[in-house]
Image (cartoon, one colour):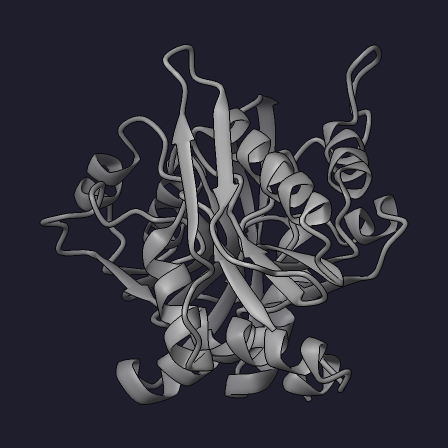
Length: 310
């Protein structure tokens, strides 16, 4: 078992290697002058099980291409099997045709990764569960809910909590977290007039004088979460805490969060945001390295991954 680190999230790769007590594969990943990706593996990996860790976050196209070329290099180096560890799976939001004549990019990306030579996929909180079916190889989808529940119990230590789904699609995620911390849930009814924009229409559930925990998988520009926090406050909620798996944080997202009525936003390190949130007083990062490394170990040993979440 060996771990090859892509360049999208070096800190997470190092933390995973530390958890597994392994050295990262000696490799040279660089760009030509025109932006083409070049990779050279500087050690023998013949017959080894290789895990290549690479999030397809911003710049999504560059990081995706790097992942594909890493997989191809490993295949041509006679690796026994290749597991693509993709903590944040980009293009996952385009998983179906919502309007005519659009691409289903999640399916296209899954085909690219499979054809490049990956034998297995390991990801975290896929935006849509059906993406697992887009692959013709095994897919393990890890969940951040247990880590969030542990953080709430150990760090927040506040009473009168309620879990809030920011939209109808996030109900199952909110219910799962609510079950783990033994609280009820509420649902925000929102509309999307255009991509990246949202309007809160109604709130289903009693959130008056309660501390709200909004849980979601992705925060991009921050508009949805900021609007949700304002709507909850307008309905007399107390403090607003937000738990997000993948913090894309495009544009002025960090500034919006800092000015918002969110008391604390907790996210994971599936995307490297160390530079973006430097100096932020509201954003906290918790690591997915322990759960990802444990899943990798179980895959290498052919033992159950799903039992991690029981």
